[in-house]
View 1: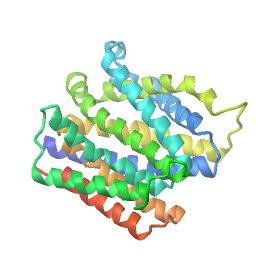
View 2: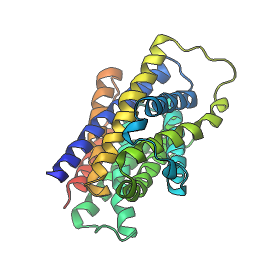
View 3: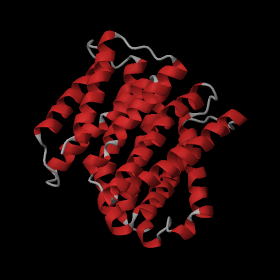
View 4: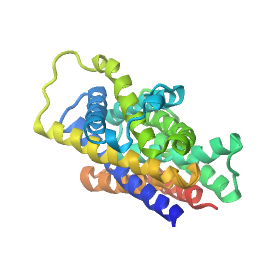
Length: 289
């Protein structure tokens, strides 16, 4: 029963995270929010919710916030979000979702290298298929030309996937020791603080944000940050990092589905094949026993 509850929390987290990629694209393209400012406001609003509403529910742990592990995770998360928001300026929402999904392929490899989980044949097959699919999505089967804006965006998003995989592994130990709420609050607070110094890099002067911009910021802060991170960490309390990576195929499917519906993102033969391989690979990895 406990493991089933953890699995349900992980699935809900995946759905919430899945709505974030289309929302980010809408905020960047339609509301014209500078990317780093967008990411920073998302986490500042989320931090305000944690401090004002969730402090007494165990979301803030003083000793944890003073510890090195939570700041290492915060640094990784900060780098990941800067790469994601900058990358989504250049690439499509569906590409971003697919490439981010490749993080699930990195998690079992990292866990195997760390000696914490076995790399069975089905996971190995999933990793191989998924990485082939990622290569097809990024390159479209053509020689890699770094000057292409969409290719550059995909590569930045791939960097985000690496940080996600590392966070999966590092968060597991902290959640067991400190609990999901404290770790979730710690990740949100440290990421917000670490993002602030980078805001001047993409804002030349005062920025005026309309109601649509604030809608996307609040949507991401409440649903895709506080809610998604809480259920993600809650799931990690009872399932392994590899099993919890089930949120990634869910996130991919939700994000790609919404992206095709909202943006009419096109798929060519090779990129479409890559998309299928990524989803199949991630499913193999996530459901392998």
